[in-house]
Length: 163
Image (cartoon, rainbow, N blue to C red):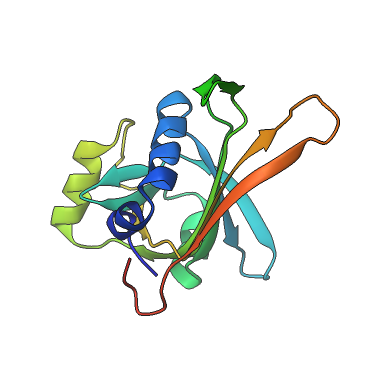
C-alpha cells in the first residue's frame, strides 16, 4: 500500500482529479466492514495533509469501530463539476480508492489534521489515516448517445509499499 503522497507521485493525474472533485463537493462515501461482515456506507470529508489522507470520525459513529477492528475500506467520490476537458464537456468523473486505514494516536499528527481540515474536528473525534492500495478513475464518452461507454484508469500499489 502507499500513502497519498506516494500515490500522487505515481499518478498525479488521478490525484488531481480527486482534489478537483473535493473542491467542488468535499464529501465522499466511505464503505467499511461491519462486525457482522456486512458492508456499511457513510459520508465523510477526506483531509489531505502532509502528503497523507485522513478522515475524522465522530465518537458516536459505528464506522470508527469498523475501521479500528478491520481497516479495510473503499471510498468513492461524488461526480465532479461540469467543465471542458479536451474540447468535451464533462461532469461525470468518478474516483474510487480502497486500501487500509489505521487510527492516528500521536498528538502532532492529530494537531496537523485539525489545523488542515476545512471543517470542524471535535476533540472526541477519532482520526484515521488511509493508505491506498487500489485506485480507479472514470468518465463517460458519448453521454446521451448510442454507444455510451466508460473510460477508466486503474492503479494498484506495489506490494512493498512503494509508489
